[in-house]
Image (tube, rainbow, N blue to C red; front, side, top):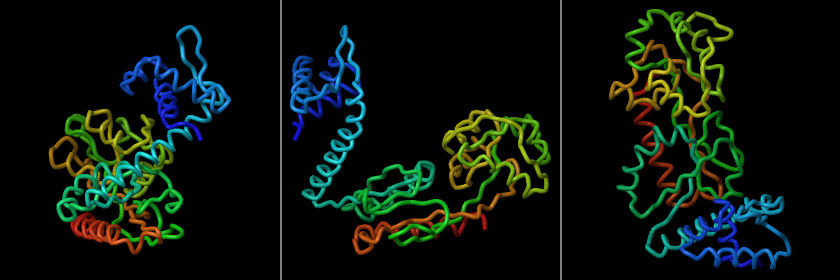
Length: 298
């Protein structure tokens, strides 16, 4: 088995491509870091790093080994934190989240869960697509789509209602008095769901096979930020912009929500269904969702 100090030294050096920076991170001398990496290479019988004229580069074998080392060190850190939490009388659960959903809906409400359950730590990890919950030792996941996830129970939270929004300056300047007038300005697009504007124009009776061009972003958070800074009109889920609407940094251009045929769900893997900590979190999420759905657009 490779030595843990050697793996840590290799990961830090590969991250910076510098023994000096790795030594600073690890509070060691540069010579000590270099020695640990060299000892690791000797134990493995391969060269992980190429050293040339004071420059450090990953070898092909080092590049392929690095992700495995990072995964191993990450899992060890997670397990160690869990051990410390248990020793302190706390239990941690791991929950997979969608970044936009977590940032704009879940995290602002998590303080309430912590007040109710101070002995339960909720660790959030981003996942964009369905995956094997058991294989990754996850205790739950938030999912957008249809109620279909193998080896798990799926609870619906609420649907998605998307509205066209823009900064107040754009709304005042452009005087958007009809849906068609939006096409005269810049439209902001989510790259993973490029048809949202087409669906909205079709819903309001202004069919548009290809809306006017505009910049693409791969996260709703980026789309929202671009709209706030006056870069164009965006169509986004209403629950993600509650703060911006309340503070006035965004305005709804036309209050004609596009009702999506998919919903948000909380998924509990079968291996965690009887865990009292997971049950407490799932029940709290359902209560929050019921309260939100009760006042959202229906």
